[in-house]
Every structure is written in structure tokens, then in C-alpha cells.
Amino acid sequence: MYDFDVIVVGAGNAALAAAVSAREHGASRVAVLEKAPKAQRGGNTFFSGAIFRFAYDNVGELDRFVPAVEQEYPGFHAGVEAYPKQAYRDDLMNVTQGRSDPELSQILIDSSYDTMCWLQDKGKMEFELAMSVIGVKVGNQVKWPKGAFVRIVHEGIGLSSSWFKTAEAHDVEIRYDSTALRLAQDETGRVSGVVVRGPDGIKTLTARAVVLGCGGFETNPEWRRRYLGEPWDHAKVRGSNFNYGDGLKMALDLGAMPWGHWGGCHATPINAAAPDYGIRKLTDKTNRLSYPYGVMINVEGKRWVDEAENFQSYTYAKYGGAIIKQTKSLVYQIFDSKVLHLLEPRYSTSEPFRADTLDGLVRQLNVDHKQALLTLEQFNAAAQHGGTFNPAVLDGLHTEDLDPPKTNWAQKLDTPPYVAYPVTGGITFTFGGLKITKEAQVVATDWKPMPGLYTCGEMVGGLFHYNYPLGTGLMSGAVFGRIAGRSAALA
Ligand SMILES: Cc1cc2nc3c(=O)[nH]c(=O)nc-3n(C[C@H](O)[C@H](O)[C@H](O)COP(=O)(O)OP(=O)(O)OC[C@H]3O[C@@H](n4cnc5c(N)ncnc54)[C@H](O)[C@@H]3O)c2cc1C
Image 1 (spheres, rainbow, N blue to C red):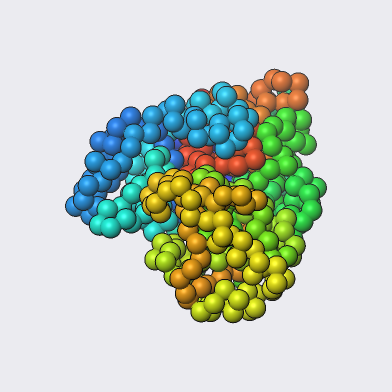
Image 2 (image 1 turned 90 degrees about the horizontal axis):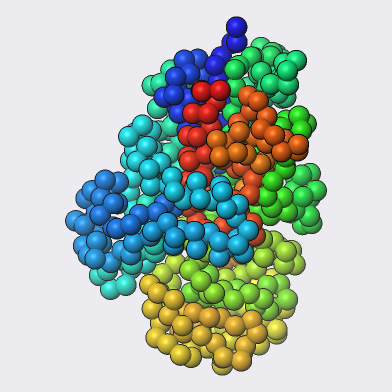
């Protein structure tokens, strides 16, 4: 007799989706093991912006999530483009250089809309539009990019608390301060439980099936150095300080197959003065994602990337890494007053440097002043070709004869006051994970599914390589968490 039908390790979006799904599919005794104390529960999910990317064939399919939207944003239905599955696939494959696991990405995309409905119906989630992060106001109209602009009310805090409420309503037993140390196996090799360090010491809890949903290794400087290389061991962590790769280690120790881009991660431009780990009252407010409307210079005083090769939702997850690799992991985002109204409200959580001249601005920064001024003058000389500034579309307003170029929104910096925000890169989550079957069962290095072991969320390998399209982490967590819970219940 097992202690539980299903044990789920972790208490973020993926794990709680798995726990609720396991109950829904007939598991009567389901336990969730959360390493964190109750006051710090919920992993990265708590810190997230809670935006979900999902496919829809027409804008009317969004009505069930945001029924009052036309009153709040007149012209919404006329202005939003469809986001069919093929568009989602194209976005995912474009940013991952064609490397996203074809089988898993198909499951993710094909199940995305249905899983949103499940989050609403089963998870009791409430939704709104992510105006503060994604909507671009042009005159009286708001322009929404396709696919990823619906989020949970109260963002990650709302998502996390809704999941805990739903799990409790489904009689899932949640144990806090409970660190899974290793997996137990019976004589047949089946995973049969978890060795846990809890408030009462170390115990082995047995179960018919175990779901690992305990995140990546983004918090672990030793693993970051080992897999991502230098200088990632020094990176600031945007979210939870509990995700040390414990679940990955437990599974690898039993012969699970590493899968996906172990040298890759999601990292974004954040306030250089951000704390070392996410803090719960700021959640994701340290992000600095309006760089496409300005320029970024490094400590050498040079631009080194095209700030505007695409909308930020397709570049932000790789530019954090590009910034970390700069000298001192420090760069400055520079804007003139023409675009200040376009900066995300999150910029208000720090004070920029300000000046009435570009020279006066760069003199306040920790950069090579002469080179920085030259860079900005060369940028201005090369800017403003081939278009009219329009923040709602890829406007083609570009630089000429400049390396690196700026491909869109390349207005001159010519309207004082000028401002500069110091920015570093913050790691969000790691891409390396485990190979799974279509049923979210972990696969071993002999290419056989491991009896009794399932995984979901950040621990799933293969979906993300090099880069990531905004809103896909939570969608993947919900899709594969739901599948893993069902599979574990039926195991
Ligand atoms: C600031 C920020 C903003 C983000 N915004 C978005 C967004 O808008 N949209 C989006 O799609 N994604 C976003 N993400 C990414 C998203 O949050 C993650 O992809 C997602 O939350 C991962 O869910 P998960 O359940 O796999 O892991 P987590 O939510 O991190 O949960 C892991 C859980 O495992 C627990 N745990 C770890 N080790 C153990 C152990 N040994 N024993 C027991 N428990 C353990 C942790 O305490 C935690 O409860 C954001 C992330 C951050 C940090």
C-alpha cells in the first residue's frame, strides 16, 4: 500500500496543474511537496507576469477570457489579428533557430487554447489584457501583438494563489518546508516514492507515481557556471531562490536522459540595481524592456546589438544574456524625450540619469565618455531612413551604414531631456531539461520510459533553444503539467 497515489514535487504552475489534473483523473490521494516555507511558496510562477501565449483562429475566441474588453479598449476586435497554430509554430521555430522539439512543440501549440479553457474552468483563473507590458497606445487605439497578451488578473501573484486555492479545493495535500532529496525505486526499477527532508526529519513517502515539477537550475551558481559558462555564476536571479536543479539531479541520478539546450537560458534586461534574487513585493517589475525605442551602449561606450530587430517579446529573452556578457555585465538604455511616454510603467521603479545634452548625459555614466558620445553622434547621423515612426508595427525606420544597424524605430536622439537607465541581465529560467514522451513520462538514456516517473514545467527539455517567445513558459507548464498529472493518475 502506497502513502499516496501521486506525489508531485514543486508548487509552481506546472506542479499544481499536475496535482489538480491527477485528482481530476481519479487519483484520490495526491500530495504536493514544496521546498519553500508557505510564505515563500510558488516558485517562479509567483514572480511571473502571468502572460500566456496561445493559438486562436479568430479574435472571438478570446471573448470567454476577456468578455468586457470592447468597453475597455474600443476597437479591440477589429484591431487584433488571428494567431493560428501555424503562426505560433513559426514564432517558436524562428526564435529557436528551428530547434524546438517537433513533437513537444506540436503538443504545446495544439493544446494551448484548450488548456487556457481548462485553466479557466478547472483552475478558476481570471484573465485580463496585459496592457502595462504589451499593449502599445497609438492615439486613442491600443495595438496588441499577436498571441501573447492575455494574462492572469494580479499576474503571477494571482496565478499562484488561484492554483493553491484550486488544489486545496480538490483536497490536494500540500506540505511546505519539504525538500525532495532523491527518488525511491522498487526492485523492478519503478519509481515508487520520494525521500523528503521535512520539518520532522527525513522520511520516505511512497507513491504509485511521482511527478517532478520543481523547476530548472537558474538559482544554482555552481550549475550555471558548469552548464552556461562564465559569467553566469554572477548573474542576478529574477525569480525564486529555491530552484537549484534538484529534480533534474534526482532524475539524472536514476538514468534519465538530458534533453534540449543545456547551455541555454532565458534572461532579460533588468535594472542594474535589482536584488540578487527576485523579491516578492517587486515580482517582475525590475524588467527594462523598452529598449527598441532607444539605444543601448556598453561600458566601452559602444552599441553592440540591433536594439530593434523585432518586437521586444521576441528579443528580450536573449538580450539579457547578451548584456550579462558585456564588461561588468552593465549597459545603459538611452532614450530622448520623444519616446518617454512609450516606456513601460515598470521603468518607474528606478530613477534614470538625466541631462539636457547627450554629452552631459554620458559624462554621468560609467562608460568611456568620448567613445559613448561618438557612438551616439554616429547613430544620429545614420538614423531615420526609410519609414515613419510607428511603435505599433515593425516600422522599418532604420539606420544606414551603421554596424550594428538598428532595423526599426530608429529615430534620432535629438529631443532633450535625455535619460539613461543602467541595466544588467537577470536569469529567469534554464532551457536544459529531461526527455519526455508525449504522455510526459521521463525517458531514460536507454530511450525507454521510466516507470512511475513524470515531469513538467521548466524541467521539460527540448522546447527552447537560444531564445524564447514571451508567454510560452507558463503555457508549456500548464499543458505538460496537465498531461503529467493525468498520466500519473492513470499509471
Ligand atoms: C520575473 C519573471 C517573470 C516571468 N513572466 C512570465 C510570463 O509572463 N509568462 C510566462 O509564460 N512565463 C513567465 N516567466 C517564466 C515562468 O514563471 C516559468 O516558466 C514558470 O513559472 C515555471 O513553472 P514551474 O512550475 O516549472 O517552476 P516554478 O514555478 O519555478 O516552481 C518550482 C517549484 O519547485 C519547488 N522546488 C524546487 N526544488 C524543490 C525540491 N527539491 N523539493 C520540493 N520542491 C522544490 C520550488 O520551491 C517551486 O515551488 C517569468 C519568470 C520570472 C522569474
